[in-house]
Image (cartoon, rainbow, N blue to C red; front, side, top):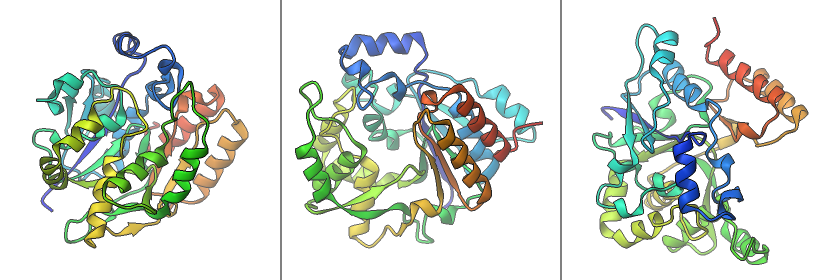
Length: 322
């Protein structure tokens, strides 16, 4: 592997222009439904700064960071120059318009699944890359071998799982406002179904995702209709598949994608207003230094006290304090 890039998908949901576009294309019900287009899916409390800082602190070997946005700019320059005065990984902002070239009819989009189905089209992207959501950080030093095998195959942090349980849950689950809810597990099940798996699926966790650009190039060139069906939804839809799971399961069927246990490497903080839960989690995280990845999901939903504690913990871990 000559080089490995990082791709971060990010949106500033507090931006009035972005809010206006969501209101233009989404129904009132959609805009208050968290699994589809609720505000918590877009609100930013500065996570992008910590995500990028963690890559510079714990993976300085990365070649480049591509920040995929809806023509927004978080203003990382001064922050990076302050905390990494001796130099930092180059950052390039990539517009949705760039990766949707030829598919502009599907823009604007407010759908993370749709966007992740297209990030492989970033001009100049390396063959091997690692995909992050902005609520992810690295929490300890990592190396290329944490993400790719010596042969260059992606490593997946996940496990095989029964999709029968997910199908039963979908069948029994009551409809919300006359529609089916969108769940993370169901998008993974849909990916497995696309490959012909009926009873088994790959369950991935909220870790960085190691990916190969050439897989998507080959697969979507052969199945262009599959790509179009997945990217036509401006907001999350229960029929969509997780493109990362599609890649992992297809490669794993050929014996090319090894699995590693996610929670041996992942510290995860669920969305909550429970201060006691947050304090206990941070205590456990502090006691063990072996976690390589951190996911702080929907910090906007935490209390101000908990959010302050989490941010201080992150800044301490990333050595961002004076």
